[in-house]
Image 1 (cartoon, rainbow, N blue to C red):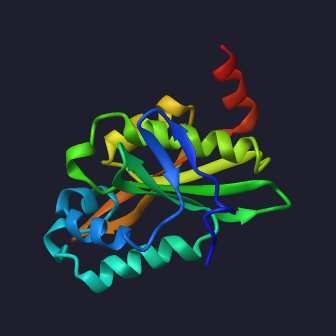
Image 2 (cartoon, one colour):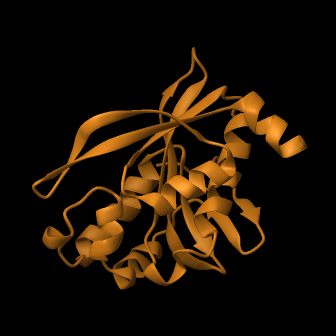
Amino acid sequence: MQTNTARPTLKDGPVSLRAPRAEDATARFKLGNTPEIHHMFGADPTTVQPITKVQATAWVHAQEVEPLAWVIDYRKRLAGALRLHSIDHHDRRASLAVGILNPKLLGKGIGTRAIHLIVAHAFGPLALHRLTLRVVDYNARAIAAYEKVGFVIEGREREAARVGEKWHDDVIMGLLAADYAKARAA
């Protein structure tokens, strides 16, 4: 398990990225599983089941064992999670995954602020060169948040995501450290 001291807390006003804590299981359970949110992650909303306490605890454990996973807090309330994964040290690149889980906090810029925090950390202390992500094509809110931070659409995998009985494209987005630095300096 990653310790709190090895995973820095990153803050931007009311938004913070922090290490997971045992009490997050209770907060995660209270948030439940919102079908519309899980649909944005690529799940069939008609098959989303209510979360159990065991699943909420497992969710926290999944964040704990990922060395570059953070819980997203908004005004000291659990909002979601974010992680860097698939790290390639030679090429200094990683993939990004973000999920806002509280439906009351959607559309408030929390995801965008959280993405800025992790991107600055990735290109700063972690010295990465490139970040990439994939997002299902109908998740316009997430695509807009990624674009606000500087990610650009680099391509798409046609019909790569099966949601229910329909096929959707995965949009592939990327961001380079130099481009992020230029945009921040402007």
